[in-house]
Length: 489
Image 1 (cartoon, rainbow, N blue to C red):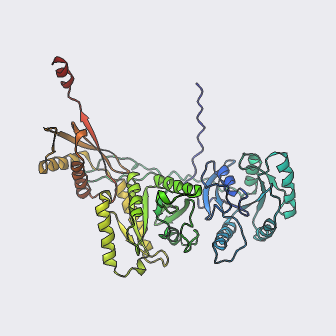
Image 2: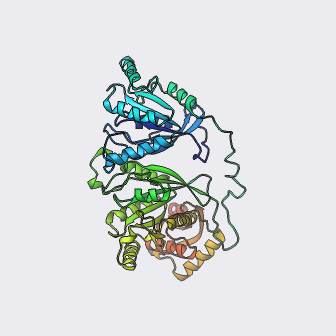
Image 3: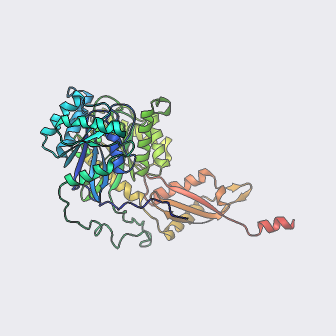
């Protein structure tokens, strides 16, 4: 049978800061996000038949005719006062144009040229950037004929495409490559990424092994309830107004990723939409936003759970923490708006007590207090993320693990189940990320939950594994005489 799998795409270079930037701009609802998804090769940006779905700049890596580019999807350009939401969205889009190596100016060929198209075409032309005029939604003969009206904008020959149906994309990619700056000399980015220390094994007796991370950026997801300050924190980390912020809750709709270099390390930080209770999610667009947030959490190594310190721990915060634990991610608790908290000691104690009671698996989670608005204390977040990721990658040597296991059995013997004592034999760690252990023994699968918690809490304390989920799997051994004895009787 023929192999129907799609061929693998070439692996992208690790650093992307020096890649050419291609920004997609235009008024709302002309198909910018659909075109963005086509060029990056997957559904990375939210798409809905509603104007203004995209609010923040979304960045993706696209392979165009053998060249990698940083593709940026922007919010729709609209005339609005600077202090309004639409004014802040337009300022973000204008910032993307200023940093771009090439601008793709999109119009709706079916709707024809509008006054907004003419106004923003003049503005783009004044930015002194290479521009390609894209007449989107030009499927069929009628659409191609309508695209000719775009000549009146004075941006050159329009390229008739249909991002939804994939028409005209080959010509568009060829034009993009022709308008990019010359390609630099190739550099072997992988030469220093892999080394002789890239292995997982056991170290000296009694040591917890901390294996090297896989090459590539450390992936961080910023999660939390709406209006907790996630986007403000993202801007504070990046040192620029990358995300749209304001007093309105739920401004972020899509998961927005950005790359940050700090102290020799590369981070990929994803700002996610606020997670509300399912009962309050009605609109299809918000359901898509929640799905994108959960997907970003699944791809992350460390989840930064942002709480509004002035409000304390809400039930929805606990639900998000349980989701982090269920997905097996390392966690850092970020207490925002710390500058306006009056009794800081009582607030910290109340939050940690609530977590320890409701979430035993989050015991020892690192806590960072800061003010994202003023930037005070934000510099402590990334070191805490590094430490949490180190623990998440930890391995315990088998010999040391089983000596500890024997001492735990002597301290508290396994309970009786159906009048018979369980015979637990040995343990081993089968994987990290998160630390996962397997316990072998006769009828081990019948071990009660309270004894499992006793072992997990002991491992967390003895081997210094705070704040990360610990998986304990049970493997029972079969009695070879059980079936024979049953047949003889």
